[in-house]
Image (cartoon, rainbow, N blue to C red):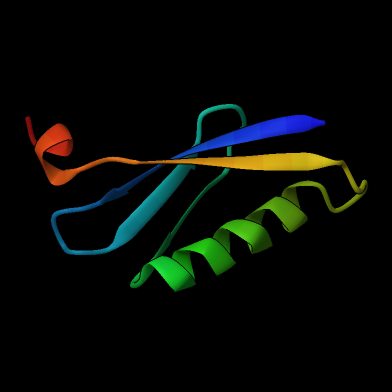
Length: 68
């Protein structure tokens, strides 16, 4: 099983941003629900020619960690 790790943070405009630490996948959303849906869509697009068995891991940064 492949593990995909995403770093998630809220930018200065209040938009949630996710970036894969393993692959060149990045996306964003106005809400966390929208962000997670966009992450799944981005993964499906990235693996459009195959259907891997993957595990998703999310690391949500606190604002104090982002702007420190």
